[in-house]
Image (cartoon, rainbow, N blue to C red; front, top):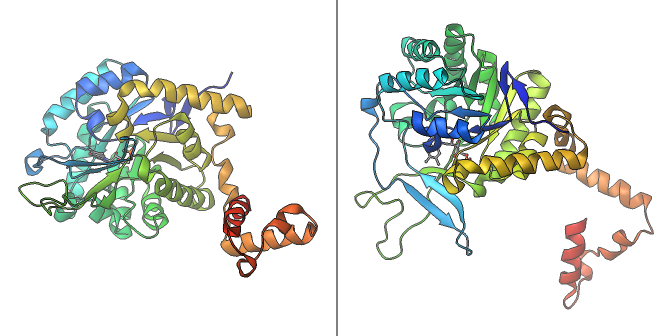
Amino acid sequence: MPTLATTVDGLKLPNPFIIGSGPPGTNLSVINRAFKEGWGGVIAKTVSLDASKVINVSPRYSKLHALSGEVIGWENIELISDRPFHLWIDEFKRCKDGQPKGALIASIMEEYNKDAWIEIVQRCEAAGVDAFELNFSCPHGLPERKMGAAMGQDPEILEVVCGWVKSATSKPVWAKMTPNITHIEEPSRAALRGGATGISAINTIRSVTGVNLDTLRPEPTVEGYTTPGGYSSKAVKPIALRMVMEIATMIRAEFPGRTLSGLGGIETGEDAAQFILLGSDTVQVCTGVMKFGYECVKPMQDQLLAFMAKHKFETLADFKGRSLDYFTTHADLVKRQAERKAAQKAATASKVVKSDGEWSGDEFVKQSDALSRG
Ligand SMILES: Cc1cc2nc3c(=O)[nH]c(=O)nc-3n(C[C@H](O)[C@H](O)[C@H](O)COP(=O)(O)O)c2cc1C
């Protein structure tokens, strides 16, 4: 029988499914509900010491629908938690008093100020949280205060802040990366150099979901105006997988043993399997929970177990990072294909694919099929 139980950075998790920071972890009541449904861990909504500076607006979401009506993309201009820090500390304590089976992880964000980072870490740790996630990645609002993604886009600052946090706690520290950067390995590397035990990726992608063609106002429209927000849900999964692959490849080469928590568009156990095959130790779900509710963790677990049974994998470690070996350069793909074709001169596949100078009539229908197969 395969098992989903796993130990990551010393955290004993009943399964790798963790609530990603956001509305599904926004207060004690919903956090408790998540644990009751069987989530392996909960990363609470990001907190800061002075919530009075956090002022949310409404509307703050704008969804992109497929023709079927399904939500496939989700923009938000929501800030971090606007609930007072002392309330959070009380709720962290009460949550841990309930002895949940999974890990309670505090997501924290502060300005570039050593005392503030140390204070927030120490007060959360005293409240009993199991680990920390450092939000270096919120792409809207907070960067105007030089926080969130503004820090995550600056490897030097990241390294320093991770060092401050690590000096203040012996708990695991995951640095959550912004995808709004060309090479995500660079800030990830800096965070690990600074002492982070792991990386979480990705936060949302800066976006504008659309413009209302009656009012000519971009959405979500607040008093007639908007600001670019963060994009999540199914539509971002391909980008998240690519970035997870890049970070995992870097971790494997340069920081073996450090961990990776993958997220971005995960809705099924099969999605989770793909993130693990590309090097994730755990997987997080935020928008998926907002679409389907906390119960979605049950089918996700069943689907992941079914995938493991099919391949005779007993543990997550049996397949973590397995698919990383299948990435190479385009030049190498060309070389491999040329070698294969040379070795199979007479094979049907190589005969079917004609050079496009030879196409005539509707030939492209047959040829595009053949070119999809390779
Ligand atoms: C409405 C909303 C609020 C969010 N708030 C936070 C937050 O407070 N802190 C944080 O680190 N990430 C936050 N996120 C980002 C998610 O944790 C996650 O990184 C991102 O949405 C991609 O994963 P998903 O497609 O599973 O949602 C938020 C996302 C959404 C949709």
